[in-house]
Length: 215
Ligand code: 5GP
Image (cartoon, rainbow, N blue to C red; front, side, top):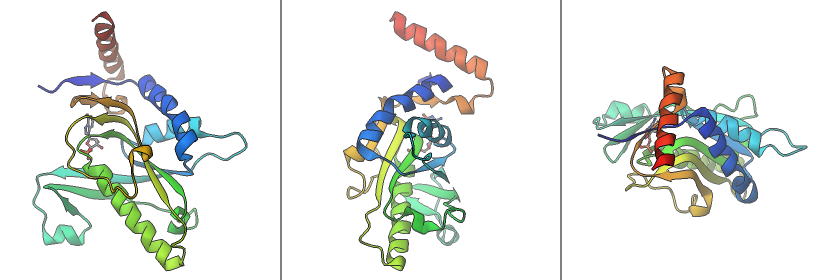
């Protein structure tokens, strides 16, 4: 059976707090794109720690991606925007909406931090980076702003140390542009926002911490 590890809201808060100084020192993001649903809460917490005095809060945009394993890809899927990725399909359930911020051109030339909760097989992150890159390139070309470099980086709470199916484009994401607050074995992480009984969840998390401390 896969080991389950319980992570509390406080754990998530502290992981974001701990990672923020490195981000401010190196990546200096100007915009966050949270992958839903697991990226939403970490992105919101990070925003507080990335806030610089005298500067406005960093905007957060949301995209929704769902992963469907082992489903055959049909022609209808391809037309509907589903892509086949090594026997896995990623489906866009929500994409960027910049109508209130002046359109997609708002991404061009920006330092963009993509936020998700966990990097498991990496399929989702590969899809997100490649699709965002494609969108930005298209808008840059249309606007004649190809000379403006758009920089992507990634933050996840947990990276599972395992062979990855997805590959991040090397021209966009090198190791300096990828931050994982924790690298963990191939366990199953229970996040607090999924808990049906948060008191029970926190109790299990506390028991696990006690056990580790006593070990
Ligand atoms: P990927 O395999 O594309 O890296 O991750 C796909 C999605 O699977 C993640 O965004 C997350 O929603 C879910 N996932 C993968 N591993 C875990 C885990 O350990 N715990 C939870 N709660 N979700 C996970």
